[in-house]
Length: 332
Image (cartoon, rainbow, N blue to C red; front, side, top):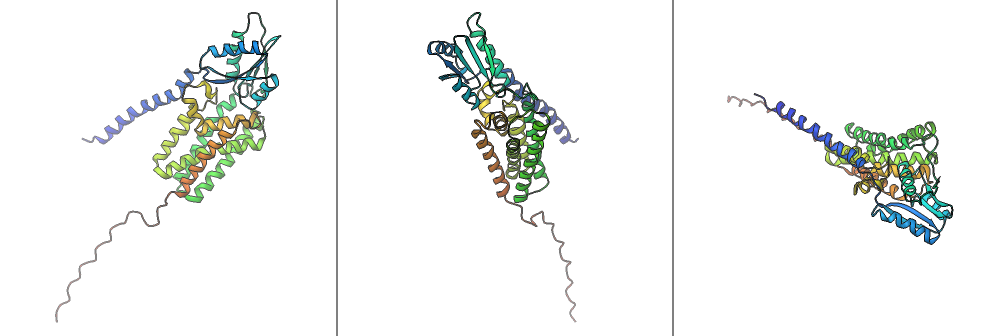
């Protein structure tokens, strides 16, 4: 009685629920634990009132990382540089909240609720959106939904290059060309058609291309080193963990620790942060994301270029048929 098919059926029956549990953990657990964790915010204004506002933030231990600024202009500059997500300017007319919905609509709403709750009774909280989301995407939904398609595009590029048997320089050139075309195509949709980005067009295309290249070269590099198993490992890192830990729909500082930090070291998280920087903040705080994506790209391409190619003619050698035995010549 054959047992191999039965074992395969049992393996599939156990593997599918395990994958479902892993995916649920990766996506649902961080979403269910969203809360501020060392979220950078600013306080500006006269010393006594500003100190009281700072103390209110610090009462929520571990939730906020408070930065003090001399005046409203300094606080605005810090928001535009992506040093803080928002700032409270304390003055005689009451607290004035400065936000940046382009940095994170979720954080902007959270700061509104926090400042309104801590304001003196009867005080009117004025709110100014210093860096607002564009009219084409007022809730930031397009950028939040863009990381999964980018991860899938990079994953497909790395897998196709591997399965097509491309090696060395040809594989690297294909990955670079695919990433460049993907960056141009996605920018045409997100910026030109949907109006969801507001930065320099070609800079955005470069950021998107670098993101796809980092993902695709990482997958192809893992496959060059590990064989077909590398594609599965790449899918786990880039699509499952990278996308769910990216924080692009909220903010890395709202995710449970160390999920937010891990997500920023993976290409989807770094790509989302870079796209925000070049799309809304003129490249502010883009250095770390560029470095992360460049490292993934360089390491992946190096693995593709340096992986040893199978020399020609090293396939399985079929045994040569034995020469027929020769009859000894008859003696005369």
